[in-house]
Length: 189
Image (tube, rainbow, N blue to C red; front, side, top):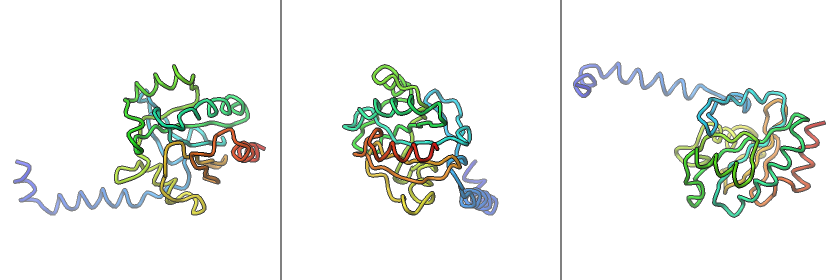
């Protein structure tokens, strides 16, 4: 029946596809606040809820050499959260299969192993054909000075209180390094 419908009404099928493509192409984000993704528990969590805060966006993984950075992430989150700072983690399985678990398994891991209290979103793709729109924005559109593909887990994007990406830190730069702390404190003033 579907083949017959498409054969009889090809114009309607093409028009519908064109409308969908145009709508997707016409969306131009102006900040991270334009994105809405689910948390690990599946609840919708619009990034607009972080308006007015300094945000550190991090792609995370449970089985990576950089996974111990969860400790530093949680520590700086606890230190600065009352001053308008938040960390948001995005689990991704793009590098060496280092985040193979389900959202529930990731949630359990984060809480039991690292006592994570900052928001962690549902698993996303941070590069490739299935790259989530947020990461397409972060790596291509947000700020030419920090653009480029994600190279590995624990890449960090620092976002100012207006939702603009101002700095990027590669995975080897720890969240509690003087460089990151100084940049966070500057934005919190």
